[in-house]
Image (cartoon, one colour):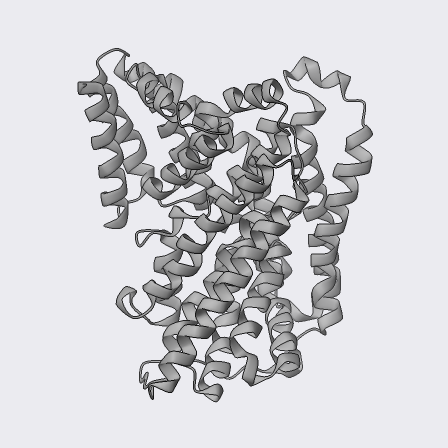
Length: 457
């Protein structure tokens, strides 16, 4: 019982102290060692150097290229004005009377194309503010609109998305980014439709009660110079390349690739084909974007360098969370936790979703929570998939969707950053943001589990 208490205390402190602003680079190893002390059945220093750091390095080895290339691609699209060009084109076509839909679609297209969530938030916010002000929609609904387009269906559900949350399950289940396309479309449709309906209903109700955009004296938004933006056709091309090339490589090239030589590296083509496809697609898209947008980039070297440096904190934070999870996994008390998770009645897809979602909520990180869950239980779920005849693709998609629910509880870093960008508070905007990024995605995951149980993949 003392070991269980140590795990619960460690997880509780991780969530609380991360919310208070202490970096997980410090928290993860310290709190992992705290759980080790309470457990008393594994050596302390060996748990740090031989478990925490080994798994930290293993995660960085597996996923650093995706973090690096994704950050560079996003920075190029941002500095060149391509992200703003896409958002402006969509908003212009839809008009101010469909401001909420325009913001959601703008964010959705950008994140589905591989642009990072934070870049999208910075790029779309000024346009969203102008649209909402012109339509007199309360500003407090902007965070929910941006989050719906960036943090939900394009991050975890839609097949092919190059976001890291969709890449993490690939080596565990031997899948690609296009795994379980119909499940993804079903889940994504529930998230998009449910979220849009909610924000529209809530904003109309507020406006009917006499609430307008509001007075925001500290709002400092510069007017956008549209004359220097790349054309929509040029701006959308790198995104099309990411999605298209990723699909072709994963499905047709690496899908038929003889990777027998990979046995000497302790892996197989099934485990790396998804990551290899995504790496090549992002590299090609970065090169194309730089060529197309060279005149829009003040300093290509500076843009690439800043993108690369910006990827470091993200990969190190997530690697620390993975190291933490793997230390917890070695503790004797965790066997009881694992048994409780696996004993959840019904299809193993339910226990996979539950463990992933809970850990994402505790860590405040979709990628961190899923990495911990799959690191601890991924091999068991793959075995169950084979035994029960459930497609590994279904496990991939359910894990990805489940990580995008409780991750955006109030202590989540992306939530705090988004509210900071928009100049709003949790009190003003979190109720609607939470409905769109927590409640509705959890519902979408349940719908997808039911569909998968009926054989939909």
